Length: 120
Image (cartoon, rainbow, N blue to C red; front, top):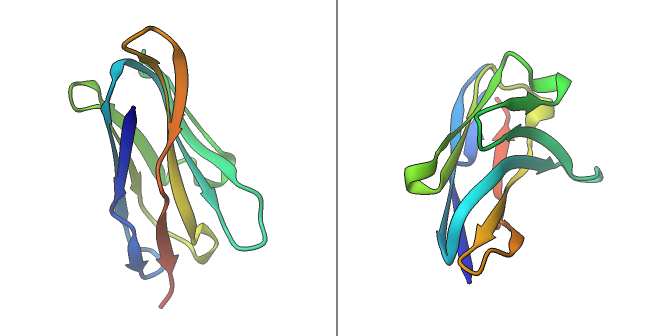
């Protein structure tokens, strides 16, 4: 069984910054892909950023140049540094891990979500 804990959300002013963290623990052999999603009220959940095991990254166009995803495999942790925040970035942010379990099954696990509110 794998547990995921997200942290770092909160209220931030437009133009401000916040860093989200997401830690996985439990029966993990290795983590493949790490992703951040977000869901605003009335909208579908969208993929914001992804980072592969080799360190390749991908971003949705609306956050390119402002958000940075990173990972620390030694800590089974991913981060999302969010700069120059805009009101339209306000959403609940979810992390997702694609990983190999101790029995070498490929599984996924999601975080519980953390709210990032952007408002003056």
